[in-house]
Length: 257
Image (tube, rainbow, N blue to C red; front, side):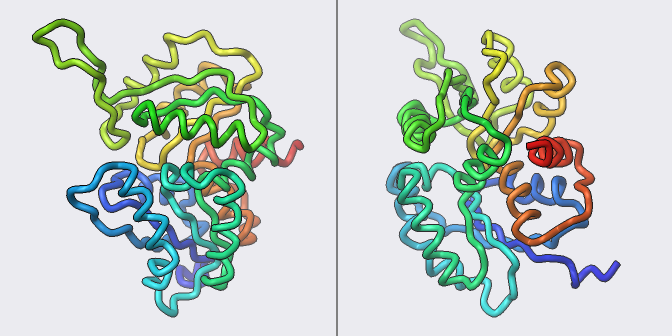
């Protein structure tokens, strides 16, 4: 195998995201080479302002790949694209594609493409986000024509009641554990026909998904990174069967459509 003849995927990630590159590399294996660029650090600003900054700098940030030829680019930050709404997100990605000279998609657009390819119309949203951002995410999917059956919030640490307790739940996608994800899902009774969508590129999900596949082999499972890897293989023309079982499962389901 000629390593440098493989299709090339560019991935843009938030600076503190510890999850996107490892998951892309595990999912894609030797099918594609992955190259990354990171959004700038934004000290002293709130979450919403940080996400808006990401959208503002993204066109110029794509230039950080220089003359490196890329076959596709994934913007691995779902939250910033929720702010744009489905139509705004699609138009933004189209403009970025023209600028970059190759297909560029946000993880949110990759998920919508996967839902279309799989015939998914109903979602249960599994979210590690703060409630306001979870609400923004839900509105995004509903405006895109999907039905959100319910939302499973996955805080990194639960809230505690009482005058001397810690108070509100703490949300941080980067430190959510596999056990926390599985516990919150098991606490819910999920409709049989709802797909599970784990939003956010920074929440590690592969181990949780492997366990859920064993428990419910027929349920559709989607994540920001899984859908993005699936999209990247398709748009780059990768024809060899996926080696990672989660990606292989997704590809087989889309072929049956």
